[in-house]
Image 1 (tube, helix red, strand yellow):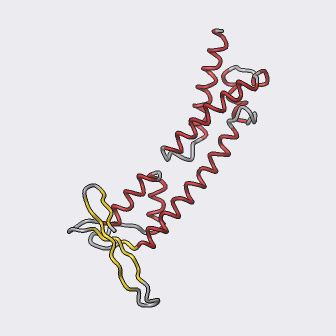
Image 2 (tube, rainbow, N blue to C red):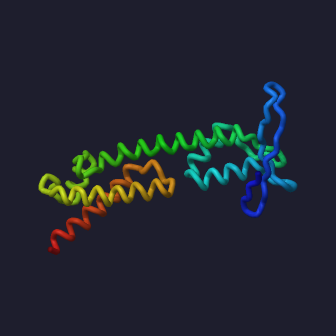
Image 3 (tube, rainbow, N blue to C red):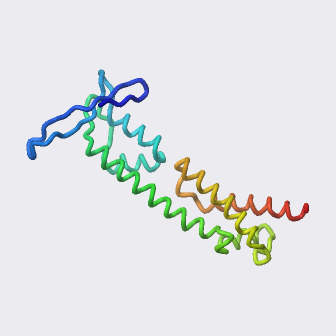
Length: 173
């Protein structure tokens, strides 16, 4: 099995583990001077946020090791940590989204309405659904870009822009 990244090829090699007699798989770059660990951390950063991949690398002690193999068990541990981290951060975004939800009349939603000069209690269900749909798009885009968790300031900016547009639409009609 091989893996290609930026024109370089990594191959899988088996190494006998002394204790259990089973094979342990190692990733190794073909060619002189290539650093498999650094390449893996770089690839991790392309699939997860740079902050999350840096935290995983720090936790697992993934430092440059030119010419040394990278065990698959380390790769598996890093992937599991990054996936768990992403899920945890998505959970944080769920609670942030609830605070900014029009339908749930979240605290930050009411505060934003007051700031823009909109009486939230006079809004209809269609307006609430419209606002929440736009905010959901923002949160989904942030997740797709690995920009999670979304800060309260960012969510407040999104909501304020939506409310200003809604206010402009209502005054022009």
